[in-house]
Length: 154
Image (tube, rainbow, N blue to C red; front, side):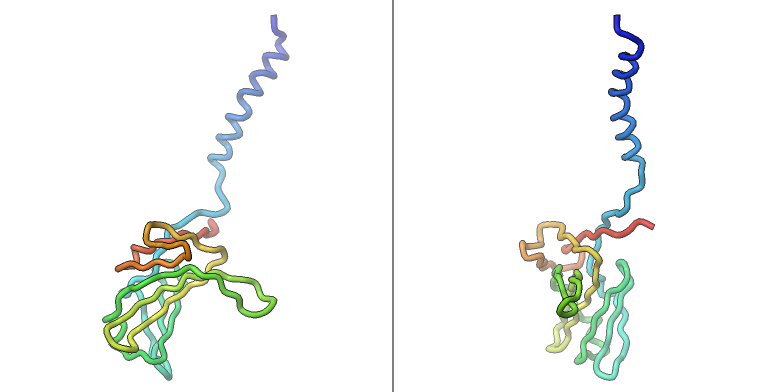
């Protein structure tokens, strides 16, 4: 007949992994993965500069910036999304690398173009069939080039 101690040990060996797995599943994670897209033209605001215009967008996310020193006021309304790219940059020798997504828009006129970009602390990941092996995506709209990034959970 098995002793009470060996039954207790066997029960603990069976129950501990289950309890541990339950705790891990319930614990908050340090990061969460979110789907992100380039900003839609309607969400881009333009500001007149000494030469051309600067552009910002807070949707989706924040921190999207761009400029075109040749732009005229009406160019933005006629632009369409063309492509997106995930890239690695470096500010200078000895500086840390950074990651960014560049979103390109073009209009019907010669100088009607815009690149919006945003930096990320970790390299975003391309999602979907329109991305190639070089992390370049060409699509007819922003939602054709989704990417994910890891954002800290508050």
